Image (cartoon, rainbow over all chains, first blue to last red; front, side, top):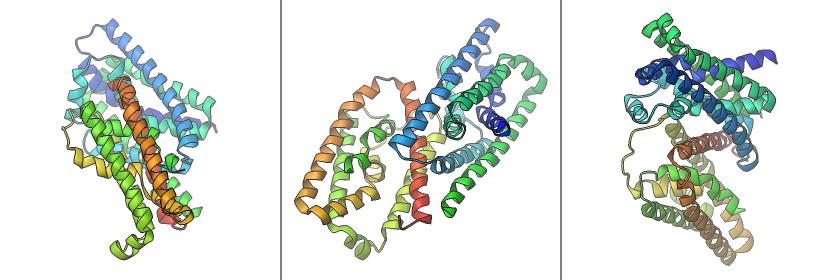
Length: 198
Length: 185
């Protein structure tokens, strides 16, 4: 049980991928003062947590009661979505130039940082999956821990930036996506094999 | 029964997203066409039923289900992964109203089967009445709820439609996997 919770925290952290966000956030907040930047990071993390928790809980109700979708269906779909996201991020970039361009037009505040930089669709689907598997109390704990970890990375982005360098950030972010892809294959396989067995 | 299967509430956010480049007048037009096409489709398939599939196209209901599932899956995954794209192109009405909006979003195999069943059990007049009633209700919901949704604002709408795409992807997987591994169900 504890292992599973730890595993879910790591999965969620991998898809939140704050280290991958670092480069984008640093560039976008280059002109901000330190105080402004930390306020933005705090706000972004809180907004990300609320978004994730709120929609994961709603998502579960939606799936079970209205759409009659089982855990296996969700797991195979989540696996496919995460797999496509991670392959796209490894082979190309997580966000293409076009997509980044449309992000930068907006003010950097809670919205682009919380959604879609930190909590994107991948994180939402992972969130719904975690709620289905772990129950509400455990999932809230998982969400808070994963967001807290991401907040730490962003809050001390200067330290991390210096420590890792541009290359280090890229390498870690890509390696994270490799693991995420492997987790995705696991989800997909589990969802499909349940159909074959059942 | 047919109303639940058509599911206008669940489809609305996604249809809003698909028509996000349209003005409100053109969006209403698109919804009207989509509902009309869907109604005609169910009507035609319910009447012609299995005959059409077996003798004209030589495909079974299973193939149709797999096809519908795949269309939904690709649609969902594409829109989930594509992220915040730049400005969408204007897009033509005709490109989206029939496929994917009418089929397989509004009506798909389950609706066809339901229609065929109604036809067998209750006959032509009941079928006509049911289809007319259901799709009028669907149309009313789509047209009158969409201004409400627009008021939510673009950011909220994006998030809601992403959630609905996740649901859609799961539904597509369910259709696809059921059709492949349990064709009898």
